[in-house]
Image 1 (cartoon, rainbow, N blue to C red):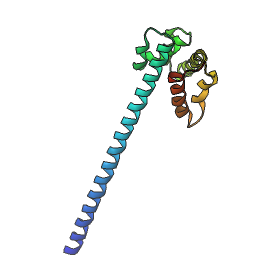
Image 2 (image 1 turned 90 degrees about the vertical axis):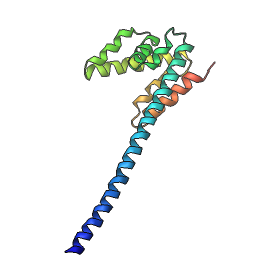
Image 3 (image 1 turned 45 degrees about the vertical axis):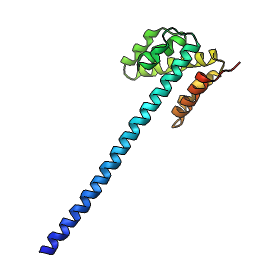
Image 4 (image 1 turned 180 degrees about the vertical axis):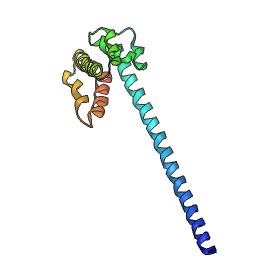
Length: 145
């Protein structure tokens, strides 16, 4: 009887240690995800601000404001900024806005003397977002003649 109690108590201690380790790993994972997202946000904002400045856009600082950056991209691609309100229409509006953003990026990349088809990188499954980040860097900080 006493042995069973002691055995259960020692198992409870092991469970507590295991739960603590699991909680620590989850916390580290969440912290890593937050840092990664913040880093990507800063990188894309800097890239779009640089692109805006190189294309002589007056309000390049809009790249730092989440919805305003889309309106900036639309304006740089010669669309009216108000198309950003398509985001308020579920699914169909999101798809339409996505198409407008891709067309805008195509035009922006052509202005910067890069192939317009770079804007299609986002459509590549699983790797598209990484390719898109690389393209942002080339277009923002690379100079082609």
